[in-house]
Length: 361
Image 1 (cartoon, one colour):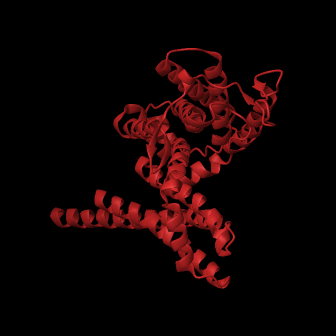
Image 2 (image 1 turned 90 degrees about the horizontal axis):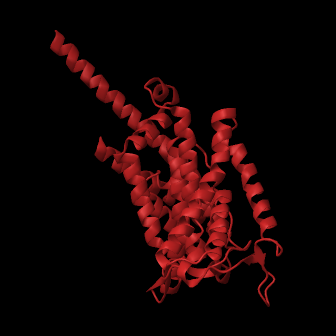
Image 3 (image 1 turned 90 degrees about the vertical axis):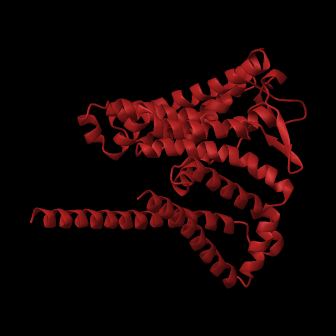
């Protein structure tokens, strides 16, 4: 059974990717382009050493967003508030980091803890509304994303927590001192964020928590059946709340790679859209830390390779079509796999019943 799960867990995402490639190939042929040549250009450009650095740095952020979404999925929660939680984490991490002076390791640790607290507390609002008031986490998180952006824009005013550097029109927080910055390391002729290792540790901790702890067992049990978990003594509402907060805390780390190793300050120029990306990556990676990593790299690779398509006369938006098709295909593929597994289990139970009937005779 374990081999079957691994087999179908591998086949499903590969089938989704191949389906996307097939659809995009048809679109390219309708435009008069050669799909093979276009894909060769994308692969050549995407695996260029200079571009691999950017892809790895982007993969770090996407991976953390995917893990945050996966934690929610395990509880059947749709954490579409990752965008707001990430912004809160990066903003308050930058503010606190710029306001204190500590030894290097402690300074970075304080920023990381602050970001996790900010993201977790912001997610706690949706968790409270879900548990106490029965409000859908989707609706509350969508609203909270807009509220988070508005609050940060207000606090970034020059008379509050923001500054306007000379020669710039981009308001930002005060810069984090050197003691609060994380180094980069040379790879592929570029500078890769060392926060990549933190993301890897988060993935390992997520796997251990989910598979080797009582909390992880209760989380999975509650996600499978709320009523059954509650009947067996699990505090299901409490588990929902804690899982929501934990997902938000991980989301608060999404922007720290850029903050600590690149910009050293927060501004409204920080990217958005991590919510939908994180949810897509969790689906594609089937909520497994290794699968999410490869999904995050694939997303970063496609986005980095998109601009070169303009030189080939192909709109770069074709990458968005590919990403969307992958998501739709993976949902369909996993549903097919679930039905195949169900049939296999029914057959196995049927065989056992037949054997028991023969023995009873």
